[in-house]
Length: 348
Image (cartoon, rainbow, N blue to C red; front, side):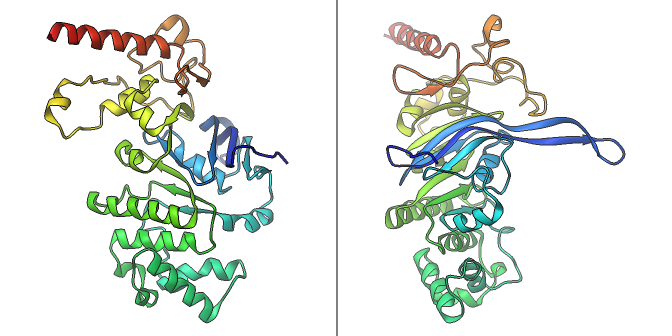
């Protein structure tokens, strides 16, 4: 057991999750691995929201599911309040799982259509032996009101609700056991933009009311900015940058983060027209055969072949407090500042 300092609730150390590739007539020959997560480390403090962002296939959902032990880690350790849960049995995890819950991406497939809303929300209470019968139904009604739905919803079924309402039901279910940590796996990506804002506001209100800690997984950087205290950026199974949300958006330090932010539209046409665009070439490499050296070098506009193609950069803390995995983070930022200053001088 490790005692955590600084109010940390969760710590992930060098987490690796590999999925075997099988071949042969009976699929009994191990020919390789899909390296979905390949050496991820981060921590989350109590009451904090850590945003985990990256394009599809980078491994962010696998990280969230492995933290809850829905997947078993291949290597690495996961500490929850100082206890190493990476090697716990499923029976041990069941006792702990009430404190760690998940909100899934798709509100249409994450709820059993054959169960009423009341049964869906009260089911965790029955499984963990907390309450049943009238007490469980009363708790379900209370949770529905907390997430902005009427008590009468307990007698209805998921197909009678809109996507946003279903996601509120899923959120109510995740709150049933009074968790400390909620892993929100793209909870608003399947919703309309107007509904997304309502859900983000609700998540923030619940965090304040119940002292919740969030791992907020998403690919939409605009959404992540509004809810996150810190943001971790993933690329091809690795974290490439971690920083406070405002600092990361104001001055990213990794080329991949720069490219992601340059693709986010800005409503001001003057700013949109004048800002720098970074276009990535090529496709995302396969996690079954990641590039040697820096995994981003095949698409990086600042690539230096003599080092980037052969040496894997460490995730290191820069002078301004950003944590980035780039050999030339300081040089890239210095070059961009000089280019910006020379552009302003020409304009004047």
